[in-house]
Image (tube, rainbow, N blue to C red):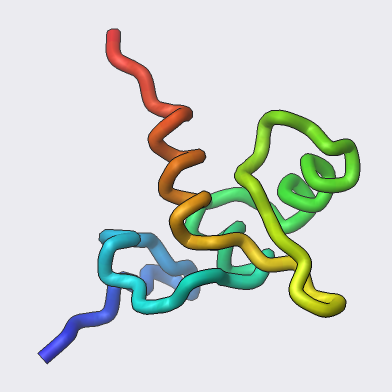
Length: 81
């Protein structure tokens, strides 16, 4: 029995593990939710072609974020003291 990778708390979703996701890519709303960012922030990074955000792709008219790219971007943002 598989458990959901999300734990709901007051209408928000908090990611427990990206490894539990069986999808290849997510839309910008889900990506923002997974990264605890606003959709506007992701859109600004994309429109300005900023190096700050994760890599994204366009499928037809939709913008998607590959889950592997989200993982790579998140690990690139971590640091040790």
